[in-house]
Amino acid sequence: MTKTVTSTLTLSGRKFSKKELIGIQQTIKTFPNLSLTELAQTICEHLSWTTAQSRNKHNACLDALEKLEKLGLVELPSKRLQKKRESKKVVWTEQSQAKPDIDSSLAELGSITLKVVTDKAEVTLWNEYVDRHHYLSYKHPIGAALKYFIMSDHPQPQVLGCLLFSASVWHLADRDQWIEWDKKDREKRLNLVINNNRFLIFPWINVPNLASKALALVTKQIRNDWQTAHGYRPVLIETFVDDSQYLGTCYQAANWECIGKSSGKDWQDKVDENNRSGSVKSIWVTPLHKHFRAILKISNPLKLRSI
Image (cartoon, rainbow, N blue to C red):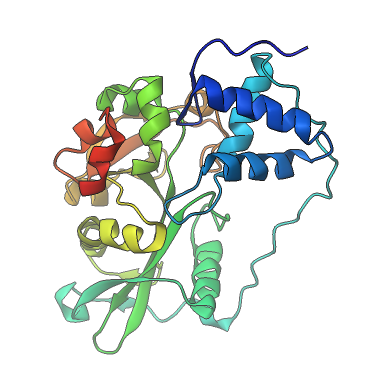
């Protein structure tokens, strides 16, 4: 027997009124034959719980339903066994083979730009480059993401590397303390922090300061690019540097700040594919808005429209 709703609740970054929680209970009772996935989609439609691009927040709803079940407020249908979906293997072709070494100064490459990767053929090539030449290989990003090619135009247009930005890590103790976040703040504003979880300069490119140049460029344009792709503007970027392999020199040169360390314990709420071993990594961040800390803690979401 389910418990009676007695107060409002904040779940998965959304505040539910008593009326809405009772409505969720009634929906579950009214449609007992729906699968858990179908139930989440139905509840999203009833509550108009959507992303900035009007897509149902299906995963957030599933997470909220599981929390409601743990609180004894709902009884969910049993999960149906589904055939495990196998990730499509990235095929390496001649396009991603190592090229002749380029040893030059940054100035000799002409204009350095970042190209958002959206075309299907370019996405395939981006995946191939990263899978073949990045030490973490390619993994399909979870949630909103944005891919870039690092380009130069001299002596001819060419790709020099790849960047990926995607959803932020759910729980990170040193970051949350640095922002002065509590759990409620984090649940409401986590989407405004994005993670640079792939950064690749091709191994045959030997150009001093190219990496820091690319990082400097991305901080100038990613808010607009993210707005175009996902309908809102992030205010902070984070990344992780494996201290056993790298020093984070390019991030330091691009004026990013090292704010602490991560550990396997920081990912206890959600598994992060960059840190499955639980190794300690340095946390580097760079703000995208001068009032980022206030925005991440803002109490009135209507004010976010002007940011």
